[in-house]
Image 1: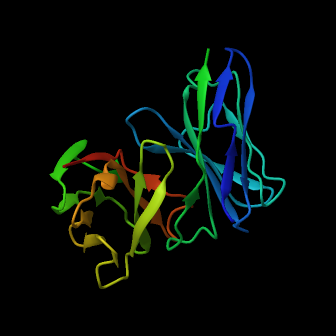
Image 2: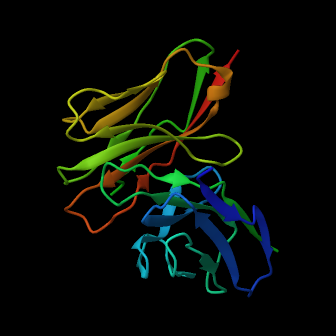
Length: 114
Length: 117
């Protein structure tokens, strides 16, 4: 079955540590996205990539980094510079970047700083 | 300025009744798409319905319909014959076209719908 796989589902991080969230898709989609969701709030865009080896900052990119070396993969690293990383992180992909294309989402990763 | 505004933090509806979830948007682009997603307590985002800015007819998908009023910049979601399984968060989102460098969905703050038996 085609889809988007995020791992792990739950992640605990000590303060000062970097941590990487995995996102893999087998939908052959060109575009991929990372969103952050805080409790009771909407989704905010962290980074997005329209094509391999290219990505753009979203609204809240500070303290995060990404790479897009393969079409299928778009990992997100939460660095120690991110002051409040505890949140729900959602990865998405779409076949293209045009305004008619919907995005498909993974199951999400809940990150908690301990 | 907010691109997507959802003014109803929470809504209640009786089972089998219809409910309207409000969404207004702001864009200077002529080409854009409007989307509604459902997020159950499990956290996954489920795509429900899409409306393009050039579509003359309101979109419908089963029990979901989108009341698109372009001049008022509103794209309200109507759920007919509510079911208990419809209880969830609902998000309105927009993707703009050529005139913006942004190539990603922008989401509203969401509406929590609770269906009562």
